Amino acid sequence: MGVHVIDEANRCLNCKKPLCRQGCPINTPIPQMIQAFKGGDLNAAGDMVFENNPLSIVCSLVCNHEKQCEGHCILGKKGQPVHISSIENYISDTIFDKMKIECKPKNGMKVAVIGAGPAGITIAFLLTKEGYSVTIFDSKDKLGGVLQYGIPDFRLPKTILDRYKKKLLEIGVKIRPNTAIGTALEIKDLLRDGYKSIFIGTGVWRPKTLGVKGESLGNVHYAIDYLANPDAYDLGETIAIIGMGNSAMDVARTAIRHGARKVTLYARGLHSNASDHETNYAKIDGADFQFGKQIMEITDEGPVFENLIYDDEENHIGNEEELEQVHADSTIISISQGPKSKLVNTTEGLKAGSSGLLVTDERGQTTIPGIFASGDVVLGARTVVEAVAYSKKVAEAMDEYMKSLEE
Image (cartoon, rainbow, N blue to C red; front, side, top):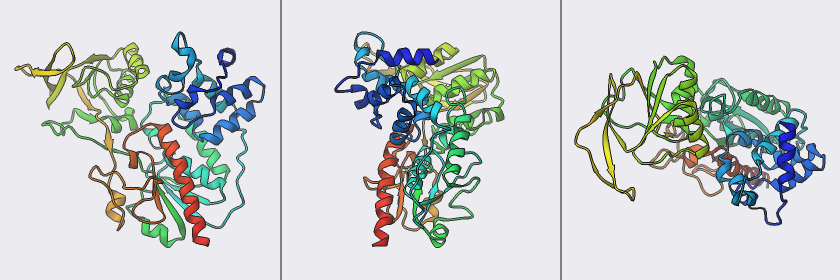
């Protein structure tokens, strides 16, 4: 691995106008990182990357690099782009455990972080560095949110999240697992107990439904529930997956690894909605793809589809009259997720839009002063790197808000 990464670093042209950096949603200092690495200063390279993106190890594994940094690399125009993700992963992974995170002296102010996903972890790191005493509350028993319960281990080893937990505890962050705010404890209790600002990063855990007959049958499941604990499910040998996004690819590849012999993904359109990378891996693992399928109903036998007719320019021009019954032991619905409503229902003045996503201004402040939010609960189901990038801005806004309380 080391030799490969060194070879890739040596291919970097160190462009004066680095398109790779422009293509990165969090503006990672890629050329500087690579130059520090090549110059033998691995620690400087690692500190630089972590300072810009506290979840750099994670992003180096799960980002859609082909459309971001690597997709913009000038060498990719006529050949292979520099494998930036491997270089970033090697640097971040190697220095993370020994890295010393410098924190300002405690300023006497407490911050509550609700949700231990990518957004919450980012806020916890950034505000602890600024001297705040941070407590993370999460409804589940392990740290990571969607990283822990929504991304399979073969894409993101969960040992990485254990290391993040250790690092957070090392800098003084307190973590309360199995504590859902909006049940026994509510936001008003946090305010009563002296938290000067509250961050909400609860993600999107409520599956979006198809609204078709048969959705409550015993052989039907939702992707987000399945991925949280695949071992709890006995799906059988033949699996039908409704949807063709990245989450659907994770479901397909996970089901195959758990013994499914025939896994088929169905989409209404004519293309996969997942990244090329994830789509190709699912194909290699043995998943089949069926396009132009409109789900009409789910029976004990499996899903029932209406076949859609498209012209040569991919315009939908009609439907076949006869419905198609597909035989499957289990059907898994993977058409995105929305937020749960516990916090909104138990917090007077906290507003959500029609989709259930929290209403915030451009800096993440909700409809209640001092309460901020970012990540999927604001943006909808998006990428890890987008959640981190937005959370950096929100952390600055929270810092400014709390400093204004002292004036």
